Length: 216
Image 1 (spheres, rainbow, N blue to C red):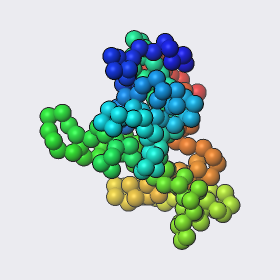
Image 2 (cartoon, one colour):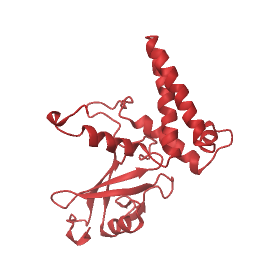
Image 3 (cartoon, rainbow, N blue to C red):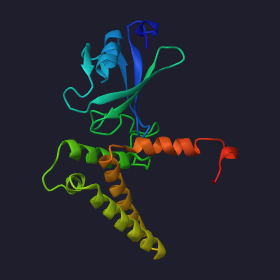
Image 4 (cartoon, one colour):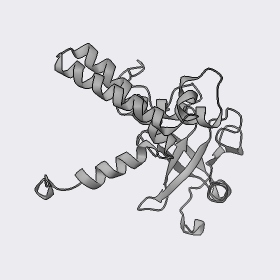
């Protein structure tokens, strides 16, 4: 990306939209000047211009909630950036996962809605346990053992999920399939993968026109 091709406003800034690379959730909006954009590109972590402090800041420099850059997109007018990131911790200074947690017609905080974000939060905890082991952690006991232990657990949970479905018990089924999904996330981590790989495969299979679908 050629920074000289970007269009900055009268204050030498342009807006930067930050989006999570797995969930697709918009995390925050900030502003950057040329130097901040260059630092973002050079370091691989987001840098912005603080209009209140009148200085460049590296997201997460104090909180540890850093944003590792995955991709950068430029809009059609070259005056706005979209940065896809791997978010560590939460994005908002309030402690919320995203800055956009309030409805436009109310001050009420939005109730959690299923968009895969909880799966991502759980996966992020699993990844954190991998790099920062915690004594007595069940996740660590799985990750530090052989892959066969995780596979055995997935087999057990799959069987229990089938039984719950056969029993036509909604509560039991939800409980068991949650265990199955959790252990599947642990297996992804063990194999050095992440949910984004699954998203890409789903997109490859189903991100097409209806008439292009096949059941082969």
